[in-house]
Length: 165
Image 1 (cartoon, one colour):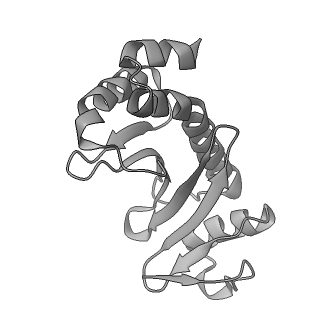
Image 2: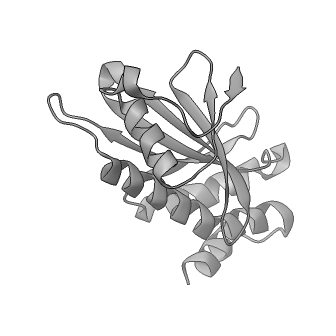
């Protein structure tokens, strides 16, 4: 369940949490988002140069982890999942910060960046920003290739070459 919130969330009661750092980062950048009612999950949309998609920021406080997802705005049709899987596998091979993943049952496709925090260290807004912006840049870069495999029947290898130039 997602509850709509304004971007002026009071983080004073969660100041030592990763969620507070993420909220503060998003507020500093004037991003509109909604917060899950009971889970440390934030949702927002993002408009890149090549399309718009849904983003999810999630924290796992007990593990000191921050995960950021960019989700394809459509489910991959069942008859295209094998070709898209090939495209994603080829794309993932060269990616350094994060990876694409697809649920083969329902066709949900997303790009994930994450951090694992060492105990005693703090995740700061700069690190959050690096992970978010790297995620958005990669999703925007590869989105045309993914869509061309799905809708234009472009071969995965050719679609990747077109994306990576």
